[in-house]
Length: 87
Image 1 (cartoon, rainbow, N blue to C red):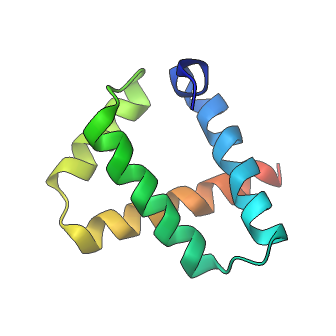
Image 2 (image 1 turned 90 degrees about the horizontal axis):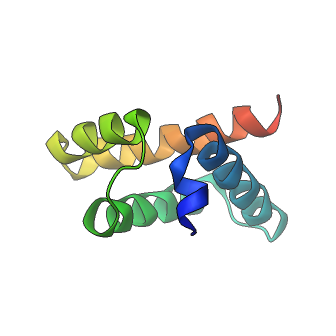
Image 3 (image 1 turned 60 degrees about the vertical axis):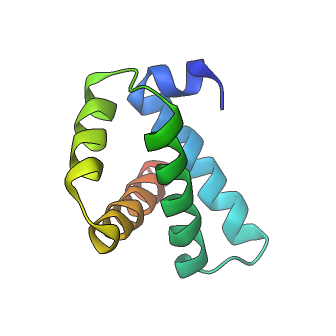
């Protein structure tokens, strides 16, 4: 993921939406996609500094959540990406 993708939240949502759509086209179910989103969220939390206010808020929420709550955040990000893809 380039810094460009992460520097703007709308660009990040579009990027995620396209990846969710690709996952669905190759037959991944919603649970698998959410699990992948959780893994990506964990990676971003550990390795990437937030690039904008929205990412800072998500990181703060992610950091205070337990594993189940983080999985919920990941699932909600997938849903947000799906809404983004259909708008």
